[in-house]
Length: 226
Image 1 (cartoon, rainbow, N blue to C red):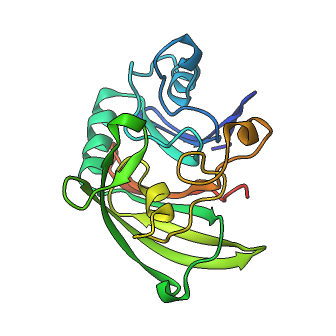
Image 2: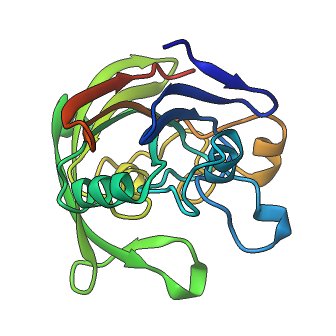
Image 3: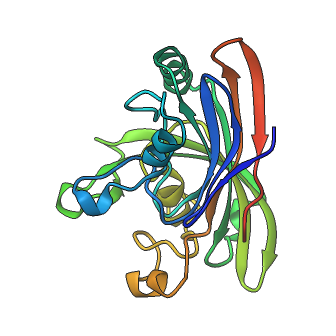
């Protein structure tokens, strides 16, 4: 099936049938509508416009607004329930490509496993903070791909789906100790720099799940645009 392209800003539909839609979400777009009219535009609302028979809430997972890449949406209630259970039970495989704003410590090696407990900081929403006592565990597998111009390209494979997990696992000194380039919350990037065209270098590159109906493994790959 040929990809369907939506204009300005582009939401690239990589696959669709009567039950699901797989897209390449652009950086800077919400996954679902936020509060207020100024945040009503989102990938989910675009899906509903493109597919009029779509259910009211097609989202079964989210990417941060500044993150680009692969997402799957449900068009039917049955598909929504099935996919939601797969995400809840960690049956879906996701991989991300990130460029870190610096070099990793030699002690970390070339790959590893990050396991940190973190939680929301109520005084600084939506910031997440490391909390070994009250935090919820987030687990990420990582692999160094290359070093170029003082930055490190890595592949992440999250085993859990905590809010800002990859961003915090990158930036926190108990993780990789090196924030994702262009990260406005955990790095040194600013809103002004994003307005001038800078983006966060995090992209959902691989997505594997079981199609709700008929049942069968589906695998998608979308190369990082950086």
